[in-house]
Image (cartoon, rainbow, N blue to C red):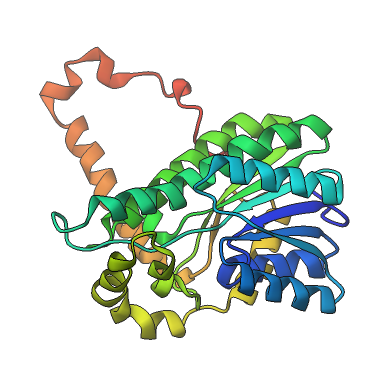
Amino acid sequence: MDFENKVAFVTGAASGIGLGIAKAFAANGMKVMMADIEEEPLMKAVSDLKAANGVVEGIVCDVRDLEAVQAAAKATIDAFGKVHVVVNNAGVGGGGETGDIPMETWRWVVDVNLMGVVHGCETFVPLIKEHGEGGYIVNTASMAGITGVAGMGPYNATKFAVVGYSESMRSELEPQGIGVAALCPGWVNTQINTSSRNHPNKELRAREGSEMLDHINEVIASGMSPDTLGKWVLESMESGAAYIFTHPNWKPVVGLKAAVQAAAFDAAAASPTVTADKGAMSDLSTVTSVPKD
């Protein structure tokens, strides 16, 4: 699609990946509504982009709250008339050792990383369909949504869910001229390692920050620039990507997982127990959620 003068809504836009994407969109002639839960850095980011001649506005929005997302959608329409591109990017880190993760942290991570994406899609997709001009949904997952990592259960679970949700929506919306991509970055230089600063329970903020994420500070600091990622997201959308990966050196990791999965299929194919059941040889045409490209 041609992005000139199109309208985008981006969550988690005050910093990191969201800000990098907002910059790339604004620099390429898009009008952008930037949303974030942190008001002060959001307003600074909006001011900086306006100073660079970007056509942008900002709104404070907690993506856990459906009504807040709906209000942000209304503000976007009021400001720009319509919306074509939605980037459900807001996310938090969360993990720990299984059996020692507070349920409150589980719910927080699920509410932000998964339900925040759901709220964005359920709110904005009807608005994109309404104008009939097509559009694009980008849902930020992670390489942690492609392969599991020890000690990151809540984060992995939500990011896997975002990938599956995106695959499902792509098959559904593609015939209507709406693209859907799962953004699965590797290490990016963001503040994800300090996302516990927004944990609703103050006591759990220090716990997550010190026990779960501090040990990867150095790795994150040396990661890809969010500005580079923002440009790559735009390029990927221009080519109609279903998945947006960022780190080519992760390919062998994904390949290893695929090999393990293929071996599991081979084991099933070699099993008399499995192959004796006609239902095990079901028609693949019933699978409709696999991206075509």
